[in-house]
Image (cartoon, rainbow, N blue to C red):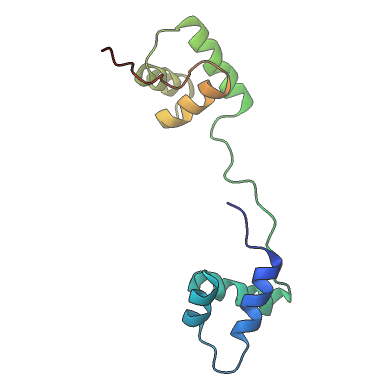
Length: 123
């Protein structure tokens, strides 16, 4: 999700500083949430800037590069294993649980699983 532009942020902040301005009315006028306005004004008060904060990159990966290599090797040896079986093998190997979606994403990134093809209908 892209942050709101600096131009929009500036116009929203200016509208909030007009006499008699209410956050709800400003939010509706510019198509933003009241929570966004609250955070924007707090940021302006605390830092003096309206610029969007830099992206933090999201949460850290659950599986390190070594963990991913183990999983890829395991799938190479057990190509017909289901996600449930992979999850059990992972848990036995590492001692810590991860979700099946995490395993699926790693395998897909390494080209080992593909999206299902849509079913064909025969006439």
